[in-house]
Image (cartoon, rainbow, N blue to C red; front, side, top):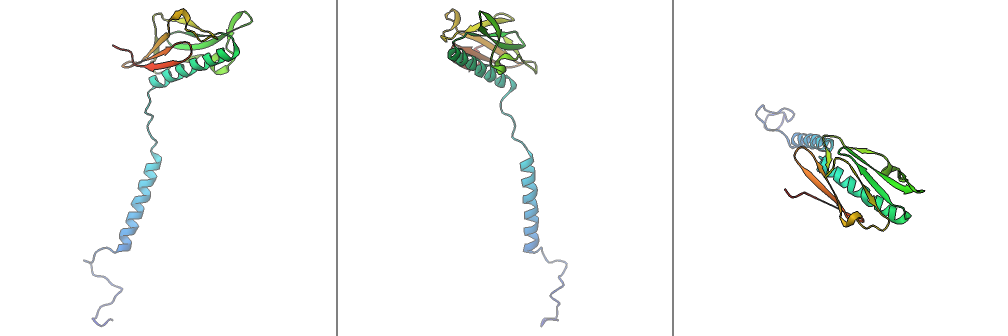
Length: 163
């Protein structure tokens, strides 16, 4: 017993929580919040339409760079659902020597390429001048959005077509 007549090991039922108990609860909340925060991945902010437009623009520039360095013309062949690149070697058009450009790229998710024709082909010359003095413009379309890729023979730009 203490001088006042109470045992320090016992607490009355109306006593509050101790600082240690509060700290333990805060640590548990912090650990759980951290685990939840790390398990949530950041959302992909680009749409499939933007990814496809960027991919085509990058591949067209790669084909132009390769044509310039090799001295051999390249070409893009497309339909409304796919495209691939070819190369002029030994007096004939054939599969492109860069494997990434040679493989057919097929769109998914309801995307399609929109141009004046349902399919087409365009030469990318080693001089990097646009064929027919006109830049190639291909639009990508989804159900609600469009993106336009313009290739001038050496570089590309991506935009939103005017309505």
